Amino acid sequence: MSERGMYVVRSSVLYFLVLCFLQCQCKVCPTMDVRNVPKRMDKLRNCTEIQGNLMIVLMETVVDESAFDPYTFPELKKISGYLLFFRIRKLTSVARLFPNLRVIGGSETILDYSLIIYDMPDIK
Image (cartoon, rainbow, N blue to C red; front, side, top):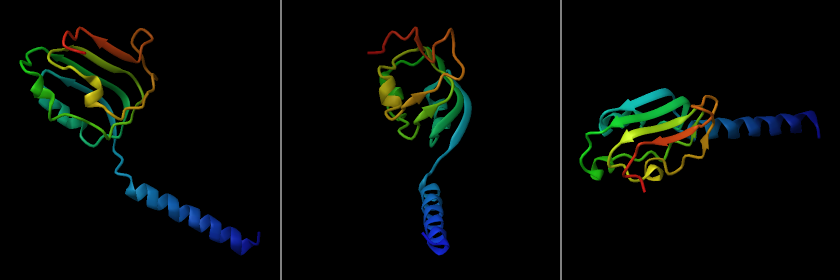
């Protein structure tokens, strides 16, 4: 391939990568600690990746499972650390919250676990 041909190929690849990057509405978020009320899960909106851990804990005063209905995060695909659910009442499905979560990296763990679901009596 000629030098001109290589330039065209490189330019095309670069153009494609720039277009892909611009179309991606990626938002990388830091470690998050969401506690006490479901409303605080709003800070997860538009996160595509969490670099660190996600802790959703101590939502013990929730009286109805419909409190979680507004919260689903299909954009979130990766958590590099651990995902912890602890003492959350009326949450019946983790999969509904994060339908497209594909990777829990485990760069940081709790007792060698990267997914911890503990003391959640309503989970199905």
